[in-house]
Length: 148
Image 1 (tube, rainbow, N blue to C red):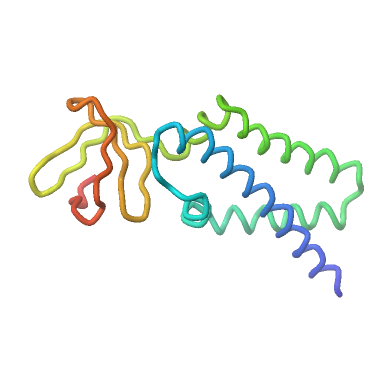
Image 2 (image 1 turned 135 degrees about the vertical axis):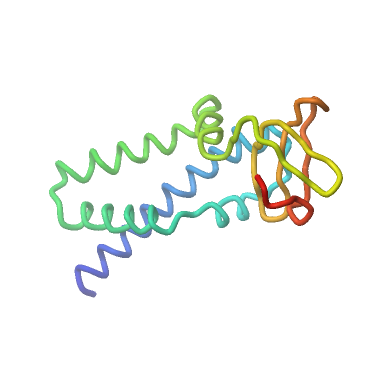
């Protein structure tokens, strides 16, 4: 097997592990405490960024295969520590809020409007905490007007 293919496969392997634990931390410490009924697989698949995944695949593959261990071990170790930190409640909640939370948004449907914080936009539902109703709502995306 050529070195380029080995670098690509090892980069995919390391990036997949990093991605897995990043989204696991977000699911455990952001999605689940909000009582949003969402499977991990859907969260993982729907929120992948192919450009970031490709960048880290190439970077990690190159570093692990072609660079000296003086560079690759600290880099990969640091990335793993940063991603595993999302398993800690405050860090996972902060990362989840940074990625998904939109504050003070107004959502319009045919009959009503809702003003509040949008916590997560999924495949079929949008989860918003309405200020007036003082509770979390799950709105069907098909009934939401496009003016978000």
